[in-house]
Picture 1 (cartoon, helix red, strand yellow):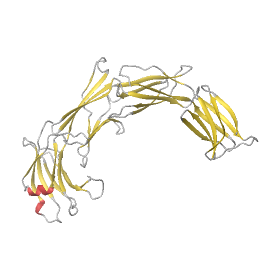
Picture 2 (cartoon, rainbow, N blue to C red):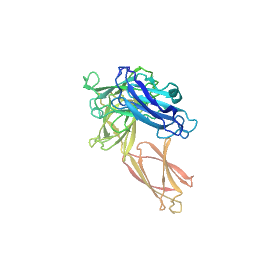
Picture 3 (cartoon, helix red, strand yellow):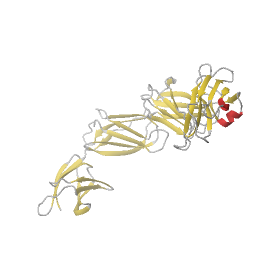
Picture 4 (cartoon, helix red, strand yellow):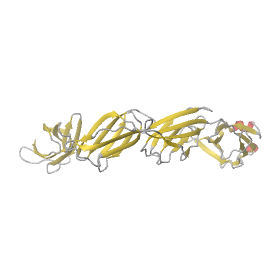
Length: 390
């Protein structure tokens, strides 16, 4: 819908009614070609006394029919001194806001022109295996920060074409969205509203503006998780990917390796710096910093080592074992540390310890250190039994 004007003619305004009588508006919404505009929302509102600044309370609303006609009867009265506002919205056409005091001054024949829409063109670049190729996409938009209107448009009819692998290596989807001038924000979401593909606020759109947004999600992270020593696949490994650059979409992606240790993360902005963390119970976590590959690039295998374990007991020089709620075993690896309670029989178990690095183990009673710390280096997969004498 290109730059259109809508003409609102209010045929009857209940301006002369007694304060106790409801406000009644009857009218017709038409376009510049004198044809009626269907689906325009007409409402009366005022700023709420209770609530956030800018919150609006409804007095009444109506929607124009196929002939552009509407009848609005206010369902309640506004508080004394409240500033009533008339607002008309037709998505894809424009909006109108006018203090009701001015509406009454203009008489019974009121002509109001809506601002033309502002347009945002979305271009999505997706990998060939993208989960968004066949998924319904939606745009959720809020016209103005204080408006009561918010709407979701389904983009199920987006044109899509397969591109040559040498260009993008996947798909492209395009959509044109007509937003009301002054639109506060919009976001593109996947099938579930928690999957935010793109978000943008403070658009500052003016009537007739045209903005183009290229959303490149053609990146694909694919690798295999293997055991450091046997090079066998590690199934069900957990993967966390964190983008280091702030963007309009999500900056964290989670995945799990399949039975063959293969990991595939799709719909990621390519060529951004990211941290990939790979681990599993019984294995140490490994972190790598790299660039998100393009749609046709493959990563080398990521190897993780089996973690180690300490099964220990602790006792005093007289042989009496100590433990309970107040006794903790502390293990430190560089700046990282972990703590576990010692049982009443003096036993404890420290699991998922990194192999090949120096560990420092000490004990505390009521937060006060007791005994001398001990330094230990474990082998991958090792389960070492140790007795500590304090």
